[in-house]
Image (cartoon, rainbow, N blue to C red; front, side, top):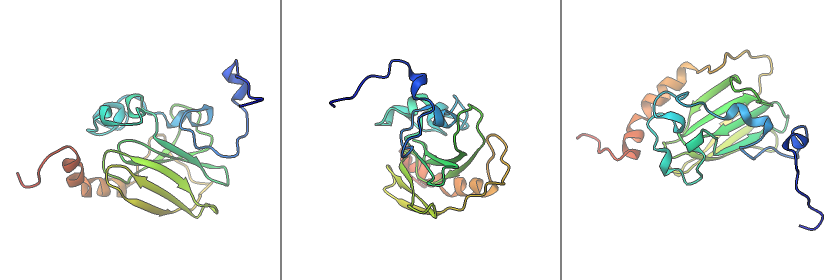
Length: 175
């Protein structure tokens, strides 16, 4: 575009305040990058997920497929190819950023996450399962999260989705 110029040093863009945060690669979302094996089995793509099937290429190096910052500017939501939605305090710059994870979609990814205009809801759209999920969202600025914290209900949801994971992997139920 006319008037556009290349940023020669990336550090010059580090402290820029953007209108929105929807790019999954950037200084303020580095904590959303998943370390190898951090999801328990299957490497960076998540539990048993074939990262080579990811059309975005994000799963191959642990990047979220989509991110969005709340309008209030205190929470970052990230979706990954394994079907998990993760919430972080914004900015999430550290590799060990505290997170809350929710199993949401069948493996193959939650393609997009977005907060509503008033931060009352978070919407996630699944790629493999074709589902559109609406989550009620209430920011709790005083909550203390340990790095990698998981809720007990997440384990129940993961068990409920085991059949969907088997179907996504090509297994036939009852055989």
